[in-house]
Structures are given as C-alpha cells and as structure tokens.
Length: 163
Image (cartoon, rainbow, N blue to C red; front, side):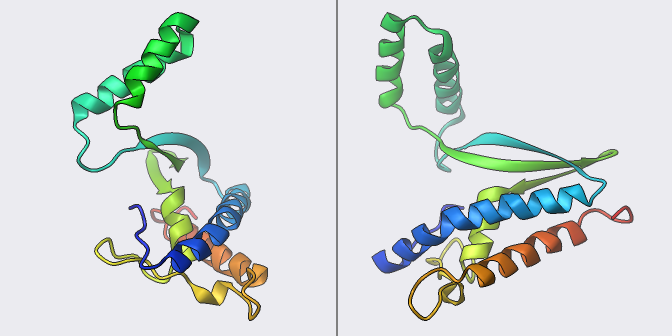
C-alpha cells in the first residue's frame, strides 16, 4: 500500500515521522532478532503500481541489469529507454527463517503502522498525532514505545511453539 493523504499538512507530518520511524523499526527488529531463534535477512524489492503489466516489469528489470555492466555509450541509450518506462519504488523486506518456517515483513508497511492510526486502502491515512508533542515536534519517547510494541507484537505472533 502506498499511503494516500487527505491534506498537505498530513503529508508533511508523515514526512517528518517516516525516517525516524524506519530507523526505530530496524533497530527494534535487530534487538528482537538478537533474542530470537529466528534468522533475519533484509532485501530490497521493487514495488510496482498495480496496473503495471508483467512484460513491462520484466523489460525494466532486464534493462536495469544490463545497465550495471553496459559501456558508457550503451548506458546512455539504456537510461533513455528506462526513462520512458514505468519504474518501481524501492521496497524493503525482512525475511525471517526458522527451520522450515518463513515469514516476510514489509518494512514500509510496518512503518505505516507506526506513523498512522488506521490503514484502509480506500481512505486517506490519518497521521498518529500522539507521536508529536505539544510544540509540534516528534515525541521521541512515544515513537520509540509504539515502534517497540509493534515489533514485539510481530515476534509474539510468529508461527507457533518455538518463541
């Protein structure tokens, strides 16, 4: 889900929260992994618009791979072609593994849970205003507490019996 905002002010507040929330999500996941028997691996994943055809995704991916090793004259041509095609947004996942169990956590979705009150794809998101203090600055303690609670909740609900 890519969040939709009802107002410019909501977008600006979310922009203030997202980076610190992401940092706290990563830090809390690391702390939980240190105490867990689950093994975690982070990976970058492309996130495409829903209506992007599979053939276009494959072409873009192939061109991006070619760009890595292309000589300068071909690189310019590849970049020109890519500029005319849709491109994915960067996504990040944590893949948890334990024995034959696997769980994937979308890190942006987790950040959205930290920063927003509700998530309904059909409605604009509501920024969690309790994450700001009375002066409008980020309430770091509240942000830390909410992030820790959500990450602990994920580990508490991992597939049965081991944790």
